[in-house]
Structures are given as C-alpha cells and as structure tokens.
Image 1 (cartoon, rainbow, N blue to C red):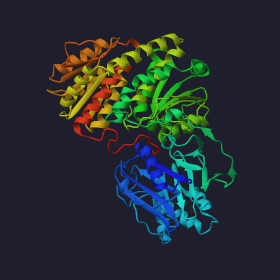
Image 2 (tube, rainbow, N blue to C red):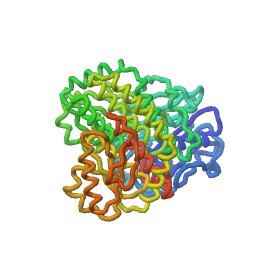
Image 3 (spheres, rainbow, N blue to C red):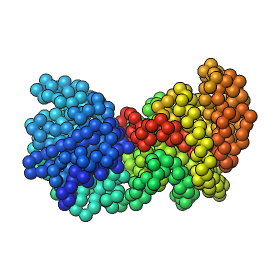
Image 4 (spheres, one colour):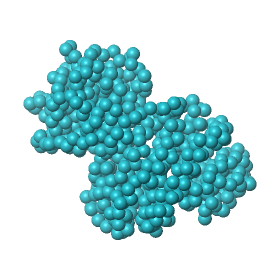
Amino acid sequence: MCGIFGYIGPKNNAAQIVHEGLKRLEYRGYDSWGIAVLDKDGIKASKSVGSIGDVDKKINLPESVIGIGHTRWATHGGISETNAHPHYSSDKSFVLAQNGIVENYIELKNELTKKGYEFDSQTDTEVIVRLVEEKLKTSTSIREAIMEAFHDLKGRNTIIALTRDDEIIAARNGSPLVVGLSGDEIFLSSDTLSFSNVASKMIIIDNGQLVYCKKGEIKLYRIDSGKEIKYTVQEIDAVDNVIDKEGFPHFMLKEIYENPYVIRQITNQNTDDYKDFVKSIKNSENVYTIASGTAGIAAAQTAFYLREIAKVHATSLIGADALEYMDLFTDKDLIIAPSQSGETADVLEILEQAQKKGVKIASYVNMQGSSMSRMSDFKFMSQAGPEVCVMSTKVFTSQVAWGYFLAKLVAGDKEGAIKNLKMLEVAAEKYLNENENHKKIKDLASKLVKAKDIFLLGKYQNLNIMREGMVKLIEGTYKHAHAMPAGDLKHYAITLMEKGVPVIFAVSEDVAQFDVINAANEVKARGATVIGISPIKHESFDFHIEVPDTGETAAIINIIPLQLLSYYMTVELGHNVDKPRNIAKSVTVK
C-alpha cells in the first residue's frame, strides 16, 4: 500500500510533476496525500485528506526543481492532514515519507520519547523521522543516519526523504522502489507505472539498498555495509505508458472491455519460452499456486486446470495463510505465483522462505521490474496494460486464461490451447458489444442493490469464478456476498434460504451441470430468487443471464457478466467505482 514519488531535474514545476506521478500511483492508496518541495527559503509541504483527483488549485507550493510526494493508505493513525505524509524533522531540515509498516514502532517511540523527542502524528512514519534525527547526532551525513536507522527497523519498509541540501534519498527493505530516467530528469517511485509516460529507462532498487540523488547524480549503496555499488539501467516496456479512460465513464468498465485483448496477448506468446517451465512442472513432486485476494482466486483456478487438464498434483494456497506449508516445501517442489503488482507482501514472504529451501519459483506478473519477477526461476508477464481500477477485472481474466493455457501446454495440447482461447476471445468480444447483455445486467443490478445478502453458488470449473464474483460484489457494493460450493449448500447454508434471497448460479455444460441445477431447485423451493449464468435457460431460473458455451473455457466467459454486475451495482449505489473505500490495489504490507 501507499505510493511514494520523487523528482529532481531542470524543470521548475516539481510540485506539478510529483502531483501527476501521485495521480498515477493513487490506486495504491487514497486516504490522504502530500507533496513537499525545496526552494531558497527551505522545504515547503502541502497535505490534504482524500483522493488526489484534479486538485491543481489546492497545491500552493513555490517553484522548485526538486520534490517528493506520498499517497496514503492508512495503517497507523486516523485519516487526517497531520497523519498525511511527508513528515518534517524537528528542525525542518528534511521531510520523509514511507511505504510500509514499522513493526516495532511502539518500542522505538517509547525509547525516543524518553530521550525528549515529541511526536505530532499517530503514524509509525514519524518514528522513522525522529530515529533518523537521533542517528544524525553520531553520523557524518543524513545518508549515513538513514542507513543506521534502517538497522533498527523491523518490517517491510521503504522511505523517501527530501533534504534542504538538495538531496533525495530513498531506501528499500521490502516495499518496492524504482528510479526512472529521462535525460537530466530523475524520478523515484513505488512502481514504473507512475513515470512510464515520461521516462524511458529505469533502475530497480533491491532490498537492502539506498539510492542517493542530487542534481543529476545517482549513487547506490548497500544499507548493511554502507558500501557504494554499481547499478544497472534497463529499458521501460512501452506497454505501460497509457493511462486514459478513452471515453468510458470509469476505468473499471474500460478494463472489462479489454478482457478480449488480454486473452489475445496470451495466444500471441511464443510457446518455446515455456519448454523448460513445462518440463519443471512435470518433474516436480508438488506444484503449489499461491497468491492473495483476487489473484489468490486466479491461483486456485490455475491449480484446478493443472489438476483437471494436466493431471498434475497442484495445491492452491493463500499468501497470508500458507505458513503451515513451510515445513512441507522441498527442493522437488515448484510454486506458481500470479500477481498484478508482483509486490504482494504476504506472498513475497512465503516465496522468500520457500526459495531458501530450494523450491523453484514461477510468476505471472503485470508490473515490470517487480520483486516477484526478479526472484523467479520462470518469469512471465501478462502484458495486460495498466489496470487502474482498484477492483481487478482484466488482470484476473488474464491470470485465469493463462492458467488454462499453461495446463494445456503441460498436457501437450498447444493447438487446443490456442484454438480454444481464440474462440473465447471472439465470444467475449461479441458478448461485450451486444447492448442487450448490458441492459439485462443493468436491470438485474437495479434489483440487487436492494438486497441485504447475495449468495453465489458454483461447482467444478465455476466454483472459483463464483468466489471472484463474490469478491467483486463486496469490493464495489459494500454488501454482504457469500460464495460456496453448490454441493455444500444442504450442509449448512440452506438455513439462510428464504423468500426473496438472491442466489446466483453459474451453470456450464459440464459434468457438474445437474448437481448445480439440483441446488438451484432446492433454494427455489424455499422461496429464493434464482439467477442463472448459463448458455441455456433452466426452469429454475427466475432471471437468466445468457452466455455463450465456450467448452473448456466456459468458466472464463462467466467472469464477464459477474464483473459487469458488480460494476452496474456500484454505479447504481453511487459508490466510487475505481476507488472503493478502505482498499488498495498493491498490498505491500502484511
């Protein structure tokens, strides 16, 4: 969570440049934001609560060629201007912003308070500021003081500091940090998306490294030893450049319409790049798929495809709840990790520990230069383009379609994989461009916004798809939604079925069809309103969302109406579609 951004260059509108960068980072958090610049009179800061949006008039900062900024997802302390970053040092000689969590901040704060330091905010970030001040008493420079401070911090933390000596210093331990380059301009940020429109090259900062910038000068240091080290400059992938709604009212709807595109990106891949990976899957004793949130559901669907199509012993894990598997991992195992950002903290923690045990790592990531990609033995990029809406749609579709593609390759059916995904792409394109489909889902959305509870049932290939439908409804509508296996209904949840309760079923033409229909009949008999997503309208359906039958990829086509339902319900309720409350897209803290 949170986004940090910095700029040094010849242009004297640093505040505006940082502001633009923060807008491209806002999906990482939008509780509050702040910008600080340096002019001849010292460091000046401006902070505000809420989303950045288009607030150019609120930025009352002087002209400057250097500045930093932060967009916040609150972890410690309420949402207020005082708690917004960046935070001043006591003598205002520097300001500092953070992405991460100081796990031992209470202990440090107590120690610093005893030494006479005062705190204005409730944040753990201000503890870092005061700690750096304390280290400055015995250090030769603020760079050295920051390194010393990092030795005392526990947790995954990345910071950026602006000093009155025209310096920007950033240090990384866990949370992401990259540097963008364009001529004499230097950009520092939490991800490449924030500056890919203005920079063509980048430097990826690894864990345990500090980057020092001053008037075109860039130096990289190891935090543990203070030793200067060499850095590598890389090209930025042009696919990350454009962030525009392109006439759509919201990014979410635009990104749903891009589902066919991301499927096509998979079929356009060179399958030769998969030969060693496929061989490793076949030779592994156990294959685990691991991710969190929406990506966690995509990981579970990938495991389903590997079991069902490729007959691989595949187990899906959730990042935050995979610790009990640590003692089971061996060097004969392989982990597959799909991720939008490639920086998910709880997943990275498991991957780091598994890698030490010799487990092979594979990743499927949408963000260039991510930690997950760099630590992987097999690395693949989704190339889905920027996904700005915090609710993931097209990247989830890409992850699931890739899981299907991978399973078919392992099964030795490359031709079938490409043929079926191309058919899926055409079907998705047609479905999205038929106005009648949108009209039906809008009509359903207008009815469901009045519901208190919504249930989603599926089986076999559709179980995880209904789980993702649940996530989308919760994220956008803030309503209670509950997904479950259709076969488990009668064991507990049938007690909740009564007149008018909406229950959504996905019914594909597969081996689970009749079991799912039986469950639909059972809830209908108790007065529930049955909504069916299916190629065929069954008698039990009170409301039918017709989808094409795409065979083995039927579950993937069923994603689209669920995404649209969440979108239209969120619009109907008047919620912020692209920025739902309390969540962020890149979860870089545990």
